[in-house]
Length: 250
Image (cartoon, rainbow, N blue to C red):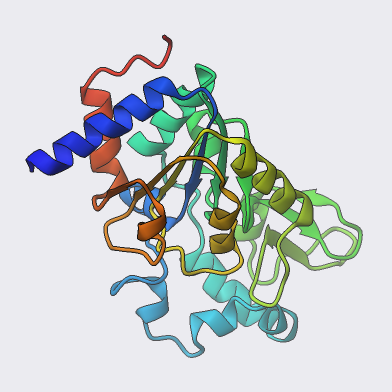
């Protein structure tokens, strides 16, 4: 216990001394809001379905079995009712006081926006953005999740969520902006991710600074690259920082 408390104090000091922080987060950021993850023992990928979730969430499956895709998507990917947690709010405060320059996320739930963050690079897209594949008209998520079957545009085209499916490439502008932020930051905090999903995990290799912090319940293959590793949930870590009354407006 003493060792972990000391690590929190080290992280607190790093944050206080840094004015160019970038946070890179994965599913562990949102699990404490109640959103299930994908790869844990109880995660989405370890549940039994007619088709494997990795297959359903692929571009090929979406194009070939669109109705089946949307049955799964509406049942398992609807996160509209969830709210941000301490991690989201704490990061938003860090941005508001000028310390945090960007959030880079693998999540598609939009909770960083709900918490108040503004500079966000969503590597895998966002369920709140949807577009017609024929005329490119934009649609809200409610239209998609409340549709009877396949959501259709008024022009007759299929509406697709603006999320990156398997077999699809990441948005080049988003990736380039994320790389630029990582290259130039003083402090890179990576949290709630096992760093196993490529190509997102490869972004860590662009960091050239001296203060790399990894916060994750389990060990990762990049732990040896970090100068501070905290094996705990993000909620516990940021609650302790908040309890220490760190002033984000100093």
